[in-house]
Image 1 (cartoon, rainbow over the protein chains, first blue to last red):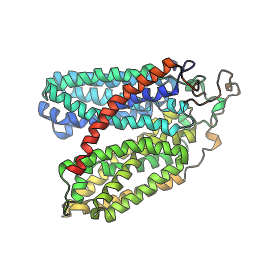
Image 2: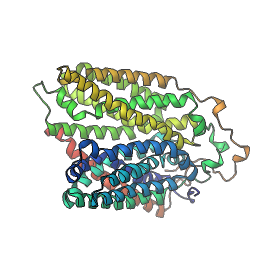
Image 3: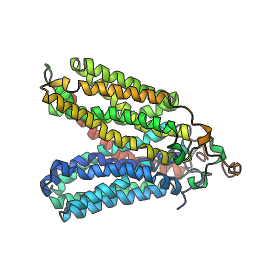
Image 4: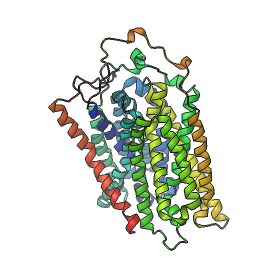
Length: 444
Length: 45
């Protein structure tokens, strides 16, 4: 399947909505928790069992992004978005069958395995295309798409809740809700499939880099460079630090101010979690766009350095001031989102556009690692402190110090990032400076 | 590699751009509205 080339007059502003239609859909994964209580009561599942489809989905996201990235580069964004659409929607349809027949393994297989492939391929599908359309603002372009992944849960959470209310929370109601999700997401994502185009003159990655493209490094070579592993560490540390707050946000703010004159109610804690989601999304577009102005290395200095400072402020002064606690947590979450959204542009700066999607896919294994590491640190330490008879903010003090340490490791790794050595570059063929390539020009 | 084709898009493309952004913007706006409703609980709850 050859990538769809933009016809003359095609606007690059059609590509971000194409990307958003995919990311806003697959971002539904973070709203899986809406289905947990109804599944538990309808099928007699434990909390651990009902989390399985989501967990498998996230594992499959990492694996398919890491191993499918080269295929995505070779076949282009339309192929990738089609695969994402088919897998993600089929996942819901298989789950609908599983709920209707009360066969839970079908829900795990459908949503987790098949749908998870859709998550991974869908996540990386528009990245390199957006970077190629917006060489002047790659941070902003990928920020828009990756903000969509955060936004997907905002849409799905109230929508799925409303649907379960209407259809009922028994197995047939859940089946109907899964069916509607599968069909609606198929229609919604089809906009991406129909609209996505690669710029004219752009060749499929399989044909090699163009002489006009500057420094280019293949995905295979990229993983052999220290730069890739430094960035892997940077992303892993930044995400771990964000998850450290995100994972236990509601109990954390409640515990912090439990012994004060202004304790936090359950509904206020839910409001805090919602505000963190907003900061996460705003960081994706805001900080990523800022990186186009101040540079990728500098913005990660801010994420990691200022992030560590924010953690220090919470650790030492957090329980004395609610506004300070909230402000620091919001800044940390905005850096968490910004870190995700800026990394494709950082990869493009280091390795070029040739196989940036595939390299990004491999780098996302850092996300999977952080997804295990972050919750493990915070939960394990909080449990041990509770066993030791501690309460309130002292449950989290040690975790915060560890987060500061991890951010410092990430800061050093970012400082170690240097331009990639020429021996890793792919030599651009002379004939690649072909005549059909139009010189880059910007449009509104 | 090239970037976009023309500095200004023809009218038909402008309509397509508007439809495409509305397609993703309306659900996103709904999500943001719901989020705002929930976030205000921090100050009122």
